[in-house]
Image 1 (cartoon, one colour):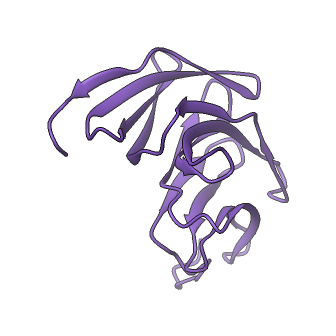
Image 2 (cartoon, helix red, strand yellow):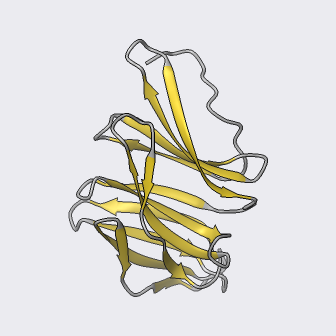
Image 3 (tube, rainbow, N blue to C red):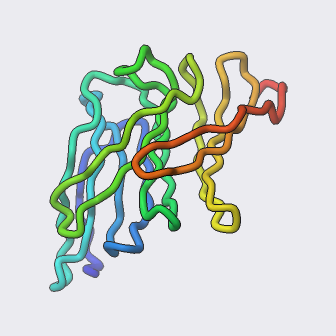
Length: 168
């Protein structure tokens, strides 16, 4: 991989990056300064130069609060959005798959995590239990978590639990 700087986008407030071990590339979810949210592949083209391909996810969504995780069992990304302007500003989660050629993305069905917007989203894959933990600061300032399980392109959720009621 080239050691020279490579600008892939102008980043806004929210972005996250996760490695795709199957296709050997980085996947980045970002919001730019124009309040557009993209998901993009970043890969070495074999000669040391980086290439990218992107797909627009939202437009006019000023605060999506996004986080990525990679489920190694399902070979899919988990895209956790704390403020989904397409779904009444609720927190949602969905799967994301990249093509082997880095030319396209396939998005799974959105699942509502909680029927309000949340902040401070985190997603972490547990390879022992083959599940993803979603954690977030809820609208009442409590810290909550829920377990997400991937089945095909869908995600099912367990029951959310309150981890702490302290102000975060």
